Image (tube, rainbow, N blue to C red):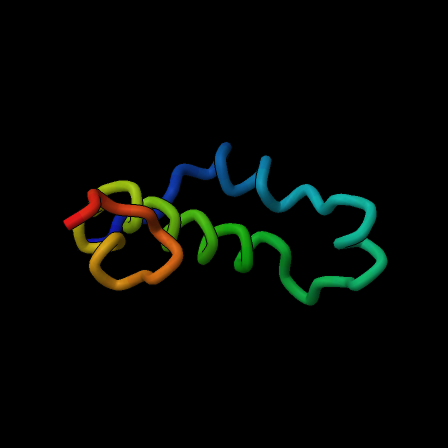
Length: 61
């Protein structure tokens, strides 16, 4: 179950860094919302994230 991040988090993340401003963004708020939703999913399910990612360290077997 995915919940939408609150508006204040989206607004903060939508503020582009200088290098992001140079590259441009068609919709920084939509991008920020998507990034935060994915981040929240990984945070809410660390075991699932660890199982799905080769970059997430886990306990040694």
